[in-house]
Image 1 (cartoon, rainbow, N blue to C red):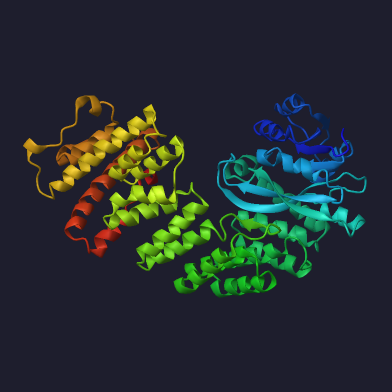
Image 2: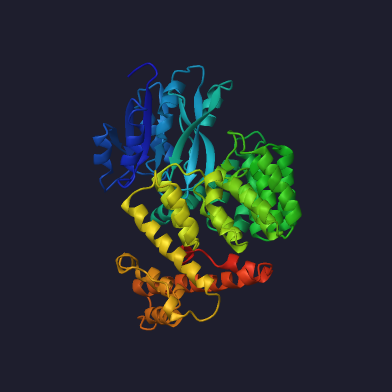
Length: 547
């Protein structure tokens, strides 16, 4: 063990599905791994040993701190890093973690814990919490609390002048994705343990705070509000989570329809924490929900000006960036300011390029203004795709919004980086559907002359899916044939539940949306100033809505 060695300490129980990912992420970052197993019956122990972990067995007694401290007793490193099996260390931060371990002037380091809504690193980040996750190994440093165990109180009690440093090192946490919460019944487990803790220590503000969080997860906002207010009465204002109490109180009040009280709490929170962007953003959400669009716009704009909250705050991902700009875009769109809406939606995409909603909204606005031909240039200017995967993804989104001509042109522009069988298939689909739509629109709303019907070479037609061929039949003027094909999909459907039933309903809805939009765009070409038709075009959802 080197003089700056790091010991990873974990407690696990039946974590075979996630443990290898966690241990792989820290393999080059730590010097030893200690796993406290509390009764696994799966492959968790074998996986831990495969990574060289020292495994000890201890019975589960409903006390997380006791299990954590059992691991500390065996650790030999200068530093303790603690993680859970449903987490992984960001691979780009290994060197920085090692660098932190050389700074002996600190007693501990806060790491940024990113709570994901899904089960992998590509899924959206819901919240970012700075948590004390690495600290000096000393005999007196021991965890406290049966659940949501803490180490900071132990450190500061023994060393009141201890220096703790906040880093940008990221830990990705997946434990509260909906699938994992349901699989482990975490909410009920946590609530039961917290209830026991509150019976033992009824005046502990941290227990009240955590109980409020569990009640919010259960959508019991009245109970959550009661515990939040108890925590506020009991906690010192300088405590690390005090700012969160204002945000959670306002959110509970909003959910209960108590708008004026929610706004008052937001303002009170901002009086205490003027740089806490989350409260500015939440104020905008509350105002917008109550129809106060002008005031909401001011709040969102202030949030954008402030930017993301400083790293010592627990923050919602997107507050001050993509969620606030999205709110501004929606307000501008509702006000009829299409140019302003597109500006803010484009800003949203700059902050969060993979976000689909603002992209869909930009496309719907441009299409309803008969500006589909400008979409490829807009994408090149604002999104600047640099890989075949990105080009394919954007082209797919364009096709999902029935912007076939724009999809085809985009693929042509980026042929140098997007050349593959998959690209060719997308390009062919976009080309034929684009030609079909142009043909239909050129014929106006009258009956198509059979002698001028759209001709699709058989070798190209064979490569198309059934629903694309039906859509092309509609564009070629075979309206009755296309509608009969759609009806034929749903007429013989078996009674639900049936996967086939759902798939056919989805395909039917997609095709009818395509037919309806084509007809609306024909009308819009004849009546470009007709606001109701423009609104109808925007209301038709993209294909993926039906999936």
